[in-house]
Image (tube, rainbow, N blue to C red; front, side, top):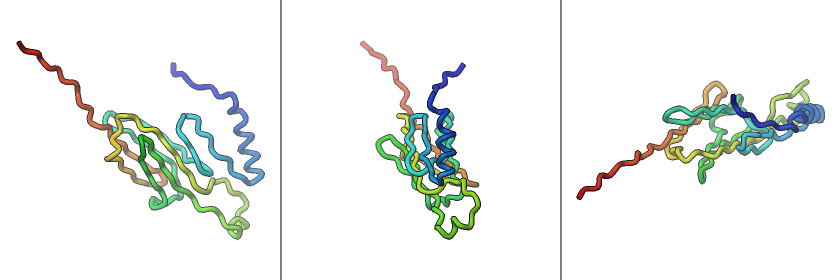
Length: 147
């Protein structure tokens, strides 16, 4: 049985998003997993650990790879980017706008085993894949005492 955190205030999130949609504002996406989200919205991510690496998959449809910036600093991986805002003329053409726009920032605390020097990233079909290899861990060596 997996332990799950209970967030009693989550029942109000749908109401908050519906009010924001009606008033045509975009609330900041609340991230509850301990990783920071900043900006006007935050892409959904999947994180998996494999034997030799960590993989982060982020949904960033409609964002060109040149508009995404990935930084590591002091054990924190930051993914920054954004989707262009609609101009007033473009907004008048739409009957409904649901896709969030504007800048986003996602930050993840990297584990000690992460090799930050060899992180790679690629974007394919609207999914950003960030691969963080695990550093080679030096195995403890037993030293024989003679004499």
